[in-house]
Image (tube, rainbow, N blue to C red):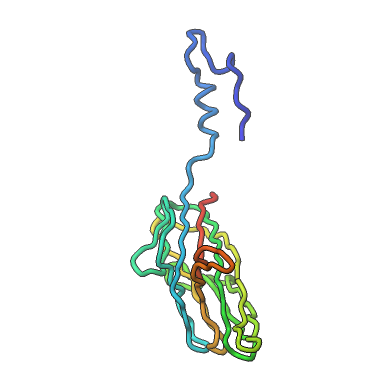
Length: 184
């Protein structure tokens, strides 16, 4: 970012802002689009079945919004966006279950966007659990929409929300959290 001009540099002979001052403002970053989304439903998928991740609620947004289906996140301005997600995964089987998560843009799978997460097996009667998290930079055009998709190898893992607790004390822990920031 440019260094702010000193007073003498931006005040003209009539003590009014000069063009140098206005040019400095042109170098300031513009307000970028953003959004924070989450889902609190338990989501399941059949074994080896691509399933769109539901994103049912909006925390805050400007220029990024849930669009139509509860899984589509659309942008209103062209640019580069950072999509960061976390999924709370729960496995009820005695074997480790691999869950794969990837992105689609306008319904087309985004090459090289898959993340594979090994969800631990249950131990005794307690299901295995882990959090999957990743982020991707995506160049998007105005009106494009993005969806997250997941699949489970065994069909024994789910996306799990944890209710607020009293022992230990904690707020609701959504199964899906997605934040979107325009970065360029």
